[in-house]
Length: 375
Image (cartoon, rainbow, N blue to C red; front, side, top):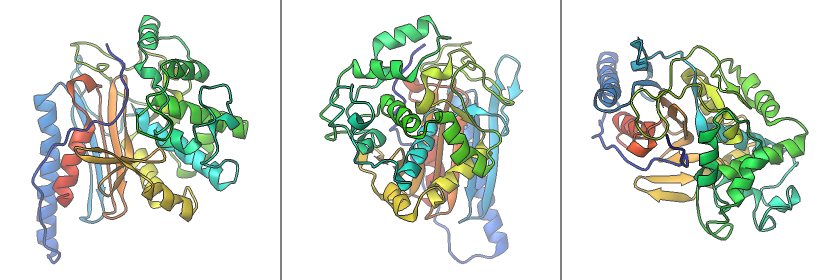
């Protein structure tokens, strides 16, 4: 069982695009949409048939084509042969970071904090805290070590998976690795950055991060199947099982195994595809932030990889015209994006974590975008 950095999967699955006429009657549109949906289903079915992914749930809300589709394939419980279910809750992992970033930026809008503030304003005791800005924490350019890459921490969590971790402990394990580069001069995806942002939010508001996320995001959107967990091994809601932790080990189930406190601001939320659709559409279309700050969030995303091209900004990932994030956590991996250009949302999750095998919903996401838009 392995714990690794939950960074982006950079493998691109290329499928030839469809080029659709802009003028078509209703019958031809329906037929073409059926063909598109058949291809979406076939792509998911193929992954279940040819990899160790037990089950997949996928949602596409494509207003450009007029497609509203949600699909489950494979199994949610291997031992009992129970099919995957579109209504199941799942752990969304690092998609949580977009929520933490949204709360942070609302505090920027409120004048409580500036993205140019230094970490030293809030926690002066950390190494080079006067050189790290809040913006650097949000866009992963701080250079601070990633605690999930600390071998000592990995050994400890595997030896005592139900240990409850405090955010400060996680940050200390990150800083014990030193800096990957001088702050602001590079990019390295580090969960430590988002833990620090969560701590800063609590310092500023006097409330728990859970309370802030619930009050500012979950309740306004009526995300009734979504929750931010602070501790415990349980996965709330009706759910199947999550399998594996980094690599394929037959029979290994990870649904309720490790206390989720180790992820906290970096990835402890659970949700459903329907709730995430509502969330990611508001996240990208606007409504959480002032218009000015929303545009900054959608434009200030330096390119961080080229195969395929990916960009990362203020707790937000961009692939072509699609914005959102992805996530990997014990037993589950997922991708969540929305495009203002195409008025389209795509949510995909696998009930497994197979990072070492190079299997991630991002690959299926790329295929879906290419099927729908030829991008």
